[in-house]
Figure (cartoon, rainbow, N blue to C red):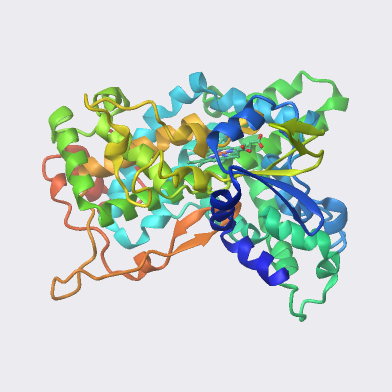
Length: 507
Ligand code: HEM
């Protein structure tokens, strides 16, 4: 049973999709004593998680995040496991409500618009960095995805490359990711002795990786927060609004008794925003790069659209977005083709319910299979192929089908950063398409180097194309498209001449 669960824990969405084909869109299972409902259709996910959100907005018990259990094996000085600072895993209640409100205030659509200029500027830095150092493209994507949210949350302007705080975030997220899935948590909940195994013993790796991440995650929660507190006295810093600075000022007017809980919630909300942006947005860009390498015709059609609407003398901005439907179709297909969060984040029921004649008990884990939705052949013919045209109608306009409606989750727990994430993905994709020709790597004889795309499960079961790319000498072809673009020519030269100063370069 453990071996079967272990296999299912690697890529459970494949198992759930098979169950969906055999038993239907709503599958009830009991694994190691825990009731679980797997939802394989968007329609049922909406019916339960959106329309009955009062019942379906809790989170499952994750033993990996439970302070009392974890204190068994953590040092007394560090009684909490670091990842408990993540609001995505807090149960449905007052603390979650406060954290959620803080996130919403900063990332709701009307507020998210103000990040656009910054997103475009950072997207151009990706291109400059790629031209200068194509092999580290994953690092450049991670830097980009964090830069917007670090500015919004802490008012911190990260360096274009090798920023120390970015390194802290990246280090903090890696070791903890392996223990986060509900399937793995179930193993620990059922066999808690695994938490007490000595380090040398087989099976103790999950415990060791959790312990290793504690310090790093706490560092990630504390250091940027302290940066804001230290800079609060500078008037130039105060002039620039950020989620933490604004709320610390608001806190000054609150009663002493409520301050610790508020500060704690603010820390959780800000840390979650950072960690939720890091892997997801850069994973989307990795998927995009993989897609255009495998489907060069998509790149050609997208570039033809940009050339006809924007031209080659300047780079696209958000004002061009409505005139570039094919680019939006590419973004939608990137979201759909390899969903970076194939099972989203599981919800849990806070009371009993009956749906369509089926009893769903209180405390059941509700897992929606995003990956299964993207592989529905009735909705997406040739679903495993990257075909942006599926989102374009006969008149050349975008269809009503937008995967952003399901890849960011459902109901009251839907991703609060979705508008910012969508804008980040669009700005990076359109800028790369406008400025670069992305192609397969070639060897010394000019022959295409073949590779097999590999995916790993990371935090929240993210899909991440892995090593094959980084072992390839040059993923990107010659950057012919740069020839007449002043901003990029200057950017590349500036990187070569004055590393670290390109942030100041604007068109
Ligand atoms: C492409 C990038 C992103 C993807 C695919 C993504 C996806 C998701 C998903 C699937 C969930 C779970 C929703 C549910 O429970 O039904 C979630 C939750 C969350 N996301 Fe995102 N996200 C992305 C970017 C961001 C960004 C930029 C932020 C920054 C604010 C963010 C903040 C959060 C937070 C705070 C939660 C927890 C919400 C809660 O539990 O109430 N995400 N995200």
